[in-house]
Amino acid sequence: MNTSLDRNALLIGTQWRRPETDAMIEVISPHSEDVVARVPEGSAADIDSAVIAAREAFDRGPWPRMAPDERIEVVARLSALYAARLEEMATVISTEMGSPISFSNLAQAPAPWMMIEAFTKIAREFPWEETRAGALGGEVMVRREAVGVVAAIPPWNVPQFTVLSKVIPALLAGCTIVVKPAPETPLDSYLLADLLIEAGVPEGVVSIVAGGREVGEHLVRHPGVDKVAFTGSTEAGRKIGAICGEQLKRCSLELGGKSAAIVLDDADLTTVVEGMKFLGVMNSGQACVAQTRVLVSRERHDEVAEALAEGIGSMVVGDPLDPATEIGPMVARRQQERVNSYIEIGRQEGARLLTGGTGRPDGLESGWYVRPTVFAGVDNSMRIAQEEIFGPVLSVIAYDDVDDAVRIANDSDYGLAGTVWTGDRDAGLGVARRVRTGTYGVNTYTMDFAAPFGGFKASGVGREFGPEGLAQYTELKSVYLGEPAPGADS
Image (cartoon, rainbow, N blue to C red; front, side, top):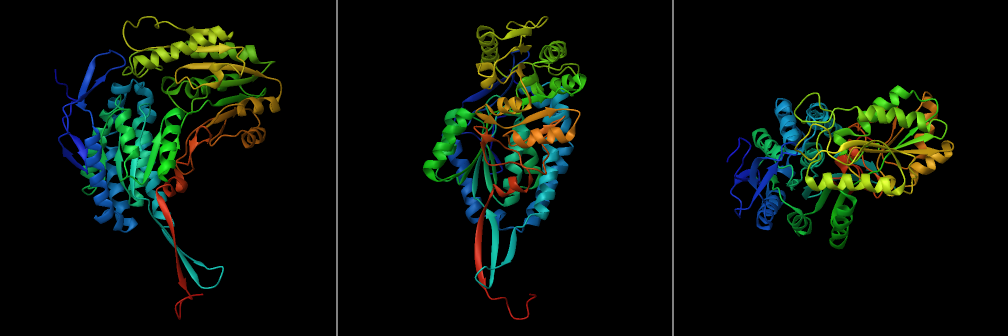
């Protein structure tokens, strides 16, 4: 049975081509468990073709040799085209991975478009070439040149957000790029491919080849690739980093998190609960920046934990395409089983289950659903407090004083995000300065595209967004010019 979302070709070198094999990916609805589309499964041979096209376009094509303003013009066209397809993009993502349509309309589709707009502005102001006074006399030109052929490997949880955080700065820098989407979420990448072609991205510059881990590793190891940009698990990131280290290949890794929300005693309880209903279980808990550890003073622990349990437990679980749904399914059965196994681990470790637990939510006969869950009385040494669950599971942890709260927040292998909740902004900033994470929020949390995003410790290497994110796709070249030309301005 064919569906309207079926495809039969791969984007190789910004052109549609038949795949090298007949292997297909069946995209399964996490809600109905039915097949919603079939698309080609990329092979190592398809990756080879994509890298050859990218290498040729970079080494001999016009794209890296264009003036930055010419590349910016192409990306600006892409932005206009993207803006016209936001509703369609949101629906596709919710269909393939189960993100609630309310979240897809809020973040999954519009945030990538806002990112394109932000990077376009950054590129216009970026110091692609500057002349400095040399320390030894004379002048030195510093150029920022494209790093080369980029391998981009996004995850399935926020597929467009993570792919465009790589594709857009790579394009603006003059790189060529091969994207390997996750097999769970290839459909949104086809819509992006159509838009790239329509925007006028030249031949050879972009390829999109969905496939599994073996195909991804083949791309990472490929000698024609100059840089790898990866978002995903810390386990996979360690392996990619090791391969890149062996080959002295550039890499940027945006990995996992176990973020802590520190609730100070003067925090407004209603604000905290509403904040955690979004930040704690955003995208059904399938978010690397989710605030899954809630740190509360011993005096307020029970009060806050009970309020969180009531708020999280009352969230609407159901069909991701229903606008009323707040918690959708997990992306796959294995993810549902993983999250439920952690809920059982929490019970065995002695944490107190306030709401949720294992078992299918009421009224849902199919789909990979998990009941939104809150544990109280959690010790930070427990596995549910130390390991990334990637589902709608919150752990409430007691602290003695603010110093103890900061210690607990930092007692983690991760350092991606975090928040502090307080009526005193200055006190919040004081906490923010002490917690070792790459991003932080006071009474809120967001990723602002003008500022760098990334993590400390096992949460990754490098940064995305802001001028720092664009710089990740460039190499620095210094050119000694000698004395200034006669008559030049001093």
